[in-house]
Length: 163
Image 1 (cartoon, one colour):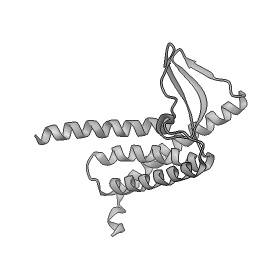
Image 2 (image 1 turned 120 degrees about the horizontal axis):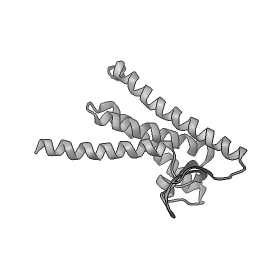
Image 3 (image 1 turned 60 degrees about the vertical axis):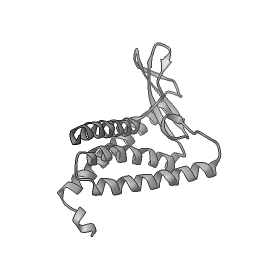
Image 4 (image 1 turned 180 degrees about the vertical axis):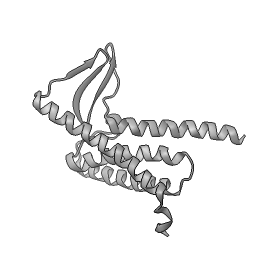
């Protein structure tokens, strides 16, 4: 049964996930080392972009941050199960949705790895306009967000074609 999934497309899919995961890990390790060497000082990249390391113990964009370690562990296990479900969906999906799922999986694995290694996810991209700051995020969050946006757009365009 599993052998039907082991084809050229499967290896390309794994390569996409691996690329996103590695890009995320490299960026996070770079920023963590940069933060340690600059003693936690915020780095201004441009007028609207700073690199400022924060440790996110919640889920997307710091939502549901809490101090209870048991709840954190349950949340981490739940996220792991969601990733497994997304992998299953990617295996059985045959159209463009598969690639959108791969973006989400690659980013989710990067953040999941941080949850296991550090008990928090390092977020460091601080986008702002004047005094308005968007939520601080990381490279994995970019891929997760793009995957979700593309998935939503695909659903809208696909449903309009069916009608």
